[in-house]
Amino acid sequence: MKLRYKLLIAFFITTSLTGVSTTIFAIRYFSSVIHQEAIDNMEKYTEVARLVYNSQLDELKNFTLSIAANRGFQLFTQLKITDKLEQILHSQSQEFKNCHIQVFDVNQIRIAETGIEYNVVLQSQLADLDPTPLLQQSFIHEHALASIESLQLGQNTALTLSVGVPIFDNSNRVGTLLVRHILSDTPEFNVTLEKMLGIKVSLQTHQMEQVVPQADDSAMDFSSLSSANWLNSQFNQNLKLGEYLSYNYPLYDIEHRVVAQLGIHVRTDQYATAIQHAIINLLSLMALCITVTFILAYLMAHSILKPLRQLLLGVESVGSHDFLNSAQQLANGAWHHTLPVDRNDELGKLAQAFSLMAQHLQHSFTAVEGRNRELQQLNQLKDEFLANTSHELKTPIQGIVGLAESLLDHENLLDTQRN
Image 1 (cartoon, rainbow, N blue to C red):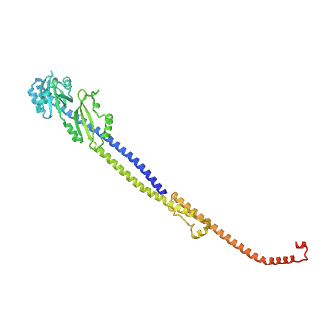
Image 2 (image 1 turned 30 degrees about the vertical axis):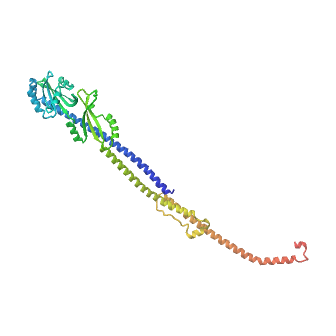
Image 3 (image 1 turned 90 degrees about the vertical axis):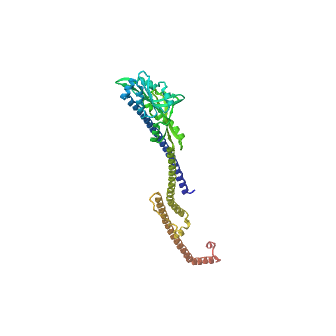
């Protein structure tokens, strides 16, 4: 495999792994942020629900205190004039709908009653109801008591916001005023919460009573620890379009028992859509980054490999030279191979070194070829000298040889002379 393809594959694998791991981390991070946002919003919704509920209870309490502070009402209570009391109560009850009002004397005997004339059966059931814990404590306390009550009326259970207030006339207690606001399936504060927060709110009775040690303000607050653990699993299970995240806010009666639950239901559409959009955007960004990085890697590999290819051609050119025919190659300009040096990095320095090496080789082979030519000339002169010398010596030598042969052929020569 060529180096270019190896570099591109290495860049692609590195970029892909980095992009995928970064995208997975970003998706998890944004999911956790949206998750935490859902929990924070649920806490805010629950706090608003608590404030609205307490506001409704305070409003009923102030309404009851205003009736008990009426001077005529106090006098009629002391005198036990039922008609006048019911007339005052009837006029005052127009402010609060679905209210049932009862007046008791100091002996805890009901002396007046009004409200809910449109439902005679419910009115009769409330009239015959045994004293509840709130009413019993209102008989003995010197201040107003307010809480939610769960009343068993025949086969049905009714939820009421109830306020018990002592009635005083010149610092003397003359009776007790009990106001019950009957909560329907969709009470007013539910509608207020739904319009204010854009969520669904439900009110339901609590089947099993739960006694808590103290009914201070902290017991009414949203428990971030327990609800967060509960909300985590619900968030993971219901994080789909059309699902709900729900939390049941407990409502306590005068004895600190959970008698009702205020259900807060938030659609998960906004969170699911936000996570989907985040995933789509992050995947698109990852694909764009990989594409751009791959293009940049290709350009970078091209910028790196181009001088390498030029260097390789130069090396191959030098390596392919026939040193035995270097004279002919020098004549043809084969050793004049140079590289374009237009870089300042390591590859540029390497190209410069290669060009310098080629120049040195050219100079060396030029010098060698010059010496070869000189030696060839000297060899030619030697051959000419030997040829001329041999020609000059050939004639006298031949004469000497002939004279010696003639002497050898003479008969009078002694053996010593012949030798």
